Image (cartoon, rainbow, N blue to C red; front, top):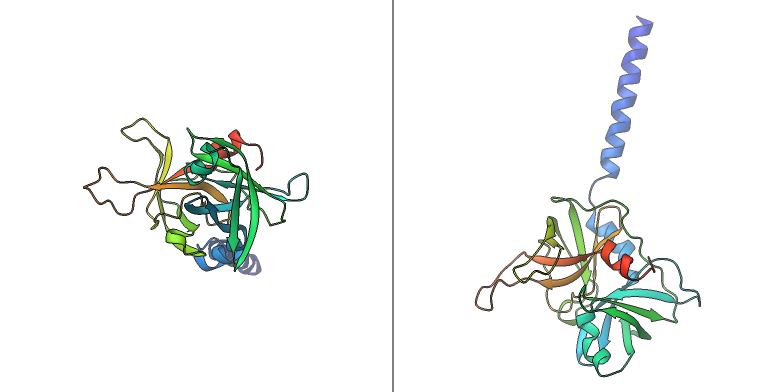
Length: 221
């Protein structure tokens, strides 16, 4: 009988442990937002507004490296400029465009100010995985939306991609913002809300550059 009771106790402890793990794994957009928002900024580049986010460890000078989309800084870059500004909580921080890759639509920014860099995911994102998109749609900072990953290797008719496709709501200004998984890690960089054609309004089709592609371009992750 004592042996039976011990087995029952072990089984109950095992189930309790599994339940605790399941609770820990619950997707919590509020907790994700709280952890991520201090590292996400509205970026102004000439007449363009988008989003940028700090990534990785501190830069060699103690400043911060950031990612955004190339199309957010295209105007400044093509005119030979390199200076943009980061905005958050009524504060403005100067930043420099270090390098760009127009084909992948990624730009590397650097700020002499020190911000906490977001961690990048070490495991590939999966279809059906829950995510959070953070950015400044229409210039509205600290905007958080949630959804799921729809496809992880989406290629468009123009041959571009592969993109991560997701259904969290995004708008102009989200470009360059992070897509975050349940572990508070970056899995992608928002690049566009897809429209099949100008006359076809599409909803719930967001596209992101896989963070692995961005990190392979610029070793700041």
